[in-house]
Each structure stands twice: as structure tokens, then as C-alpha cells.
Amino acid sequence: MRQALEHFLLGKAFRTFIIAVIVFNAIILGMETSETLMDRFGPMILMLDTICLSIFVIEIILKLFAMDRRFFKDGWNIFDFAIVAVALMPATQGLSVLRALRILRVLKLITAVPSLKRVVEGLFKALPGMASVFGLMTLIFYIGAVMATKLFGAGCAICTPEQAANFDEWFGTLGRSGYSLFQIMTLESWSMGIVRPVMEVYPHAWAFFVPFILITTFAVVNLVVGLVVNSMQEASEVETTEATDAYRDEVLERLKAIEARLGDK
Image (cartoon, rainbow, N blue to C red):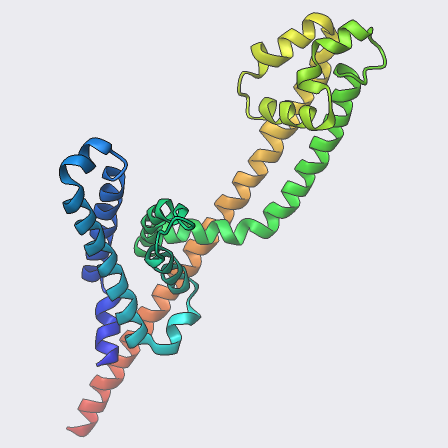
């Protein structure tokens, strides 16, 4: 009985149903943010939200019954369990923030849609390599922030106090310089907003900013993208291999059953 129930819970039909409930629940949670809709249809919206949560709870209970201890050996099952547990916590005055966390139920789509699961698995597998890249990025930002503060901020050693005060908001301290460099790395108003005004006072400032952008935006950031893509490809290959192995085992079992029947005859 448990095997049949587990097969049903992991089947395509039930997964499609859960996906539909998740999407519907996401729409309901969005409707709860509208005062107009809540004034007119508040009780019905809350009732539908409760029904969706009940379906998620029933899903967890059925999986616990069908899989027993194996349920907690799968990290995705624990992820689902945690999301539903948060949704069940009472939104009292002290825990009113939990009402906002109910939207986390939408994250159940990750476990229900295999393609989304592959993306997340690839991201997590890329974390060790990304840590090294982020370490390199931190080192570059620290060096850049110190240089920018010395060159363009209050600590400028080659300019007058009036010139140093011009860009104190952007490069006055190490923290301000780091934030300004982060803005420059994201290419958000970097030219007209920061670099060109600085170049009006320091004409040769491009010699600092252009290499910084080339190193961070076009080199280091692309390393992160490459790591994630590579990890996602590896995760997809592993999943394909597992599916092929499962299909092969199923075919072998069927051949053995046919061979046994022929032997009996």
C-alpha cells in the first residue's frame, strides 16, 4: 500500500495538481495585498488560502506515511516540510511577520518542477567554486576602495582640500568607496553619475575606473556565470544518467520476468 501511495505522490498527475495549487495559492496571496479585494471578497479569499494550505499539509502527511524515515533523507522533502511548518505558525502580534512569509509557499514550485530543481541544484553545486571567485572579488574591491579613497576622497594626497571635498559622498571613507565601486561594477549610472563628474576634476581618473570595470564586470562576474552554467550542466547530466540507469534496470527486470515465464513453460 505504501509503495502504491508513494508511486502516486511522485507521479506526474499528482505533481501537476500540486503545481496548479501552488500557482493558485500564489494568486490568492497576491490578492490579499489589495484592500479593495479584501473588503469585497475577504472571507472567500481567506477560505481559499486555508484550503490551499490544507492541501499542502495533507501532501506532507501522505508523504510521511508513504516514505516513513526516508522522507527526511531527501533535502527537498525537508525544504517542503519547513515551508509548510512556517505557514502553519500562528501570526500573532509578536510573529506578525510570519504572515508575509506565507508567500514562501510559492517556493514549493522548485520541488514540483524538475527543471527548477535542476537550476537550484546547479547553483548549490557551484557554491564552492563561487566562494573562491567571491574571495577574489572581495580582494579586488578592497584594493580598489583603498585606492579610490586615497585618489578621490578625503584622504587624497595629490589634491587641494576643496577638490577632496567634492567627492566625499562617494569616496570619503572606505565604506563609501566600496559602495560606489559596487555601483560602478553593476554599470548603474556609472558614467554620467560618478565617473564623468570625477574626471572633470581628475582628467586621468579613467585610468582607474576603466580597468576596474574590465576586471570586475567583464571578467570576474562572468566567472560566476560560467561556474553556475557548468554546475547546471553537470546536474542535468547526472539526472539523465540516473534516468537511463533506472530505465535499464526496469528493462532487465522485465526480461528476467519473461525468461522466468518461458522457463516455467
